Image (spheres, rainbow, N blue to C red):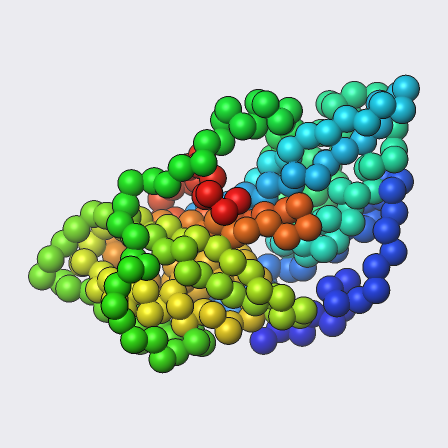
Length: 271
């Protein structure tokens, strides 16, 4: 596992309520990935922030819900605690307009990530209308009567029937991983859309549950799932999308695909 002792994770925190972009703590993706990925993919990391606020020139607070879209090709991910501290630094800072806040977010996050980051700030009513709570059409894996013995990732649990080619979506609400520094639990629903040999559902659920004691960042967990399924099940098309529950007002939703570049617009009910 990578050494993250040089980040702010697990350390004492000094909170600032005055705008401070230096609080952002980028982590190089090549450090987090630890090795050359054996497959290529496209996709993004979609972050949602529910605790964004600032003051207008008269001192009246404004609030917004923010979406931040980081390309998976960016040089760095943003350590989530530092992202939260950075957003907190807007709280007592006066800005002329929402657009000024939006422009600062784009500039600061793009500089930290080493790639252009898209930022959208929503009013609460606007966000609710655009992001319904819904499940995509697919088959849930979670109600199978199976035995679980592995709680660390085991790609050998994956298999597919080459005599039966399908196109389908499978999903599970049982993905749990752990922060690589604080060991706090991270909970998610994971959606797997693919075309190719039919994936054995019992083995896929056992594989998803095998992450239960695994320590890694959300982005790397999803990339590992994507890579393992692609290599072991010989999919011709594959998309893996994890919707993680929020912590500190932030949720992180990594999306990796062989061809799709934009994740679907829906929110899982636990979010």
